Amino acid sequence: MSIHIGAEAGEIAETVLMPGDPLRAKWAAETFLSDVVQVNDTRGMLGFTGRWRGQAVTVQGSGMGMPSLSIYANELIRDFGAKTLIRIGSCGSMQAHVALRDLVVAMTASSVSTPSTTMMREVNFAPCADFGLLRAAVDAAERRNLSPHVGAIYSSDTFYDERPDLTEQMTRHGILAVEMETAELYAVAARHGVRALTVLTVSDHLQTGEALPSDARERSFSDMVEIALAAAFPE
Image 1 (cartoon, rainbow, N blue to C red):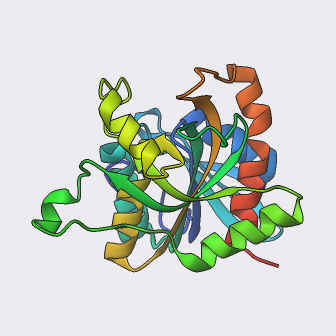
Image 2 (cartoon, helix red, strand yellow):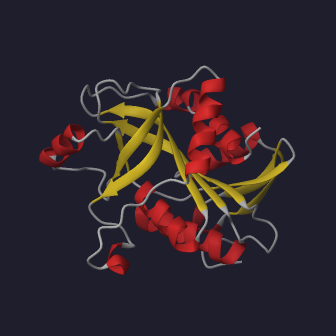
């Protein structure tokens, strides 16, 4: 048991999927796993452990933003021995060719700042995904006749951003999408020597203003969860 995760020893699997929304964690666990047991409800941040094709998997909500993600990632690794962390979540497209419902696999994650920034001092650390996980995710998507966008994303520390100039530069430099957690996830994973990946579904488009309604988001997120699981346990 840790400060923010009320699970007992042995109740958290070495492979953890991390959606931001705790209710999405509940949906993912009940939809894709068997023998599901709720292992955490501290502060309402739900966590579940079950099995996927015989393999133990935990789905733990991480909350919104890098500070919240950092708490859960650190405790999952330090206190429960997690070895593979895969963020599954939504993102906003920053490129015209990245459409609603498309999948984005994050190779790198840029940020203005993260909770880990002060640890690096003058070094502009470039956090990146585990290549084995990334390659397995792309392979899994292609087996399903899907074509994910693979490349750089931007992890923002504000949701209601008022920096159109920054968005313009991100788009100019090929950033595929924006979300709020991955840069810290990749930094924490690098610090502890574990594997991390982010697989995202485009729910909003910064250029067109399009957005998926809430019910369509759940239907569209199934591919993302299946690819994350297949990446964790490649055939």
